[in-house]
Image 1 (cartoon, rainbow, N blue to C red):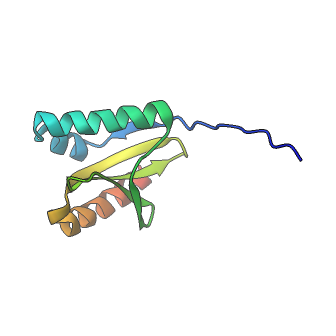
Image 2 (tube, rainbow, N blue to C red):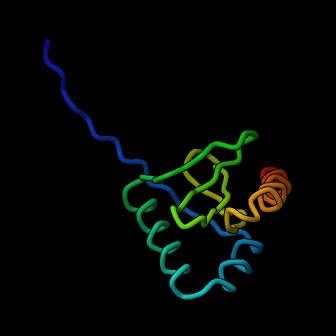
Length: 107
């Protein structure tokens, strides 16, 4: 039996909510660069990196330094960035992300 290997690359479009943009602009330059590099990698390769599913269509991108970005999918190819935060405020940030996920899933 012969196997033919296929590599399927997903290409994602990324949309920022106003809430995410406001949070992003308050971050220091190093953090903004890390986030931008990750978003570029996702758009170019489809590789999301370290991700955790939180239920109800909500996911989080994770960094080793504690940085978190909460997002959801729409139409299987658009990632909607909802908000971000650090691990030490994760519970509050997840609650906000859940509200935003519901808001933008109706949009």
